[in-house]
Length: 252
Image 1 (cartoon, rainbow, N blue to C red):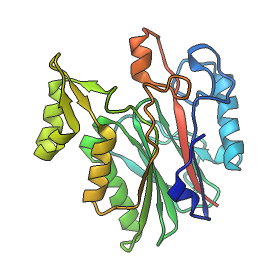
Image 2 (tube, helix red, strand yellow; image 1 turned 135 degrees about the vertical axis):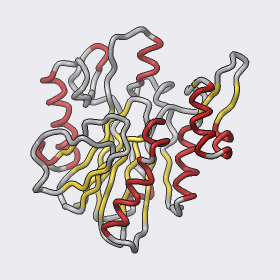
Image 3 (tube, helix red, strand yellow; image 1 turned 30 degrees about the horizontal axis):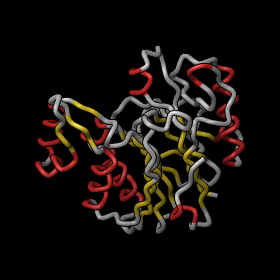
Image 4 (cartoon, rainbow, N blue to C red; image 1 turned 180 degrees about the vertical axis):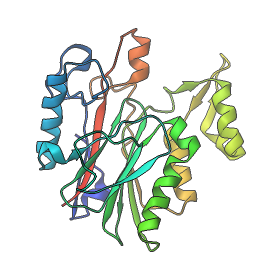
């Protein structure tokens, strides 16, 4: 388990970036696989989510997950719309104490947020598709729609690192179209591919949006084989599926 030093200083929230250890799943899913969309044994996933709920201090029904599709959709979660099903979005916000919101990742970037002025929390699933289509901007806009006066604290969790994230020129052009300055986050290799610093890109975007209270847990999910699941590493090893780690936050 990993924690943001900045968020740990805030008394009325609880958060955690969970590693892949401490669960009951076997094989390629060993052991804290929380990916409901994976091919893992459903009973093991259920047990793993219970472990997470217990760690966060809530009943299982109050752990809210998303059906993540790399969209730019953001939802506000309340007790009323918590029906036990995964929500179709890639970011969530709540002002409800005791509701834990979580994001699943396996190389993509988990972002959790606390907004001090209105006492609300959020989480974002930020892959390249969501980043380029505005998931971060939309999440902040949703916070601002609740209260224009705001003060954000953001933690960016473990994700694929800049030495591991090789992409093609087509992806570079997509980000260049957004801004030529985005080329700073791509390094060309001898094979014609590029290495992408998605963490750096996200930090830069948040700062441009006026957020300076940012904490980074700079661990590379691709390289940290014993600690994190990785979609790209699973592909490289020709595995037929992969687990997902979970990152959570709630008001207490």
